[in-house]
Image (cartoon, rainbow, N blue to C red):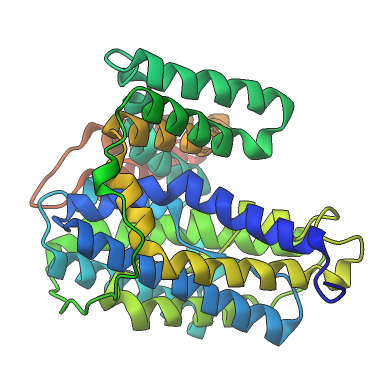
Length: 386
């Protein structure tokens, strides 16, 4: 216990709990959209937990810096819509394509330059458009599930006012309690088991790589890796950016056929392990990340149990939890998209086209949102210079 004080163990546990509570439901929806059955989803959760645990432990123990990894929550949200009607083989092809691009960015040092090609306002608007449906689903589910969803919303609001870090976890617990008491939890579907991930051969479909893979890559880099690196630096820990991107992207690439759609540098959950509450000494906070890595491994081992819990709970619980978990990301994306007055028109076009669900030539709305917004941005910028 001297090597790992209780505060570091608690910080690691809370970081993993918050990460899973806020987005496990979204990943479940994404896998289900691709036609994955409960056993396949359980295998994906096992592989993701083990991959995040291994990558967190490798990077943290190597650098003696609290480097926490995570899956891409915005990326999973994009996949919920992008994988509709897609086969599991095509989904794995998308994972491999996007993760290969991430590794390429790290190897060539193109990460920072690539993020400058697409205006930040347009990337933020695209993300907001992708996530809009989750916010809408959360509140439309209130109509037929007022007790369940209303209790989750009320609990979230109370904790958001008092202790924001635990608001989503509190909503999860409140919703689970209501589901149990009201008989909406299907206990016969719950089981404690280890599910071995299975290999899925990739299938590369050009239209899907363009319409889903490319936006997924951009969202993962702009909304997960970039904030993760920024959080690490803001906490006072210098990091070799390109090397971190190569390692995390490489691990995700290697395990993509087993359902590891992304492994990124964590931001929000990493901040928990990088805070003074984790350890008063900054040079000892890496121990909190090591603890988190251990809890990730446990979560991976019991990935089947997490999946069975998702299947046993009502869909309204999943929709409300996902919506509440993404509210901050949706509002933050809209703020960033509309922050610059001279870019607002292009950003709002990107947002609306992305949110519309438009499909042209087999290519989805996220790509066309960027295209439409990019054209508006270029034309309006040229007219202002003329």
